[in-house]
Length: 422
Ligand code: 3PG
Image (cartoon, rainbow, N blue to C red; front, side, top):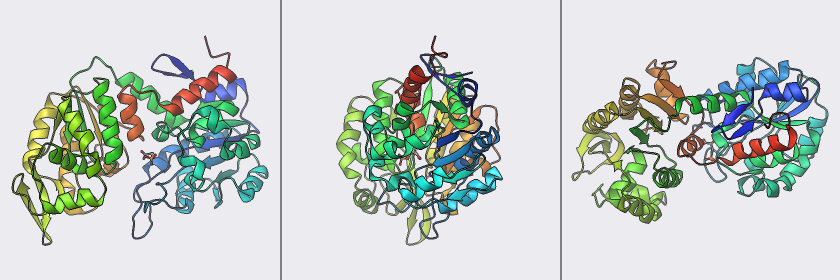
């Protein structure tokens, strides 16, 4: 059965692709999102949950008789996690239980020759899609369909499958360009996300509490603007750098050291947008205490008296946020509350995740960083918990925004799957 996008649009699944076109003997370009946290010192992949999730789609396409070319981005050019996908290939091999060939090329002659020589059952992982400069440009599907990226690769394939729910908010060639040219379908991860979210996300279910932390502060401000404009949120519990930014916007003294951190990360330029949101009544709570690092000692400091570098939220904040979560019907969490790579600063995130899952609300957790906390607390599989592969994409979907990657698949269906369109 196709999956439906907010009951408006039809998105074909792998079953539809097989039924109407036939997968056996075909060549499939599969877009996944295995963008993972990377240890900046060793380059090791710190969490492989996305790779594990997408392995099922890769395996299924191969079992149905296709040759599969897999592509994904990793990080953003200029960042320390912008790395090659060679280590991802080994993990994809481990989780699929199948041989995966990696090529350090995306659209060049080496990649194209390798694609041409594939046989049914073969799996080839291309290198980081963001090595191609077009991939970081946001444009319409029609424009990207004429990009060098798409015009070089599309003729080598029969079909395109998009499994990258977590990148569906980006209008980039590997996401929106191929569905214009090829019969396209959602992969199993994408299908599962859409089915879970449309079933679990009842717009009538209020109050809705979003617990937002993590490092992608620019994205979070954009998401808050959408959430607020669409009236999609009742309470926001801010942690991490997002909280620090809003505290400065509220005129709260976060201490010199922390101001310098915000400045060094270029986040102070977001202050006017944060202030505008507050003036327009954004219901956002900020912490009342923090775990900080003072001369290499961990301290708990209360606002108004912060001397150290903020590393996690403090116990009073956990208590306050837990009380608010008790009233919620839906809790959405994204991003850790502190520097969880350091065991001394995992407590805030652990306590918030535990409080959410033990509340009466349905809990949707997005992004990779909280996965490790869920696993370590033994909470995976709890009936009121959906762990999404998406971060920004998940939040924008929940804000009621149309995601370009999903719209592109729905439009492609109108062109290539007339049988499915009523
Ligand atoms: C994510 O982790 O949110 C996705 O992989 C998208 O990454 P991006 O924010 O760099 O586009």
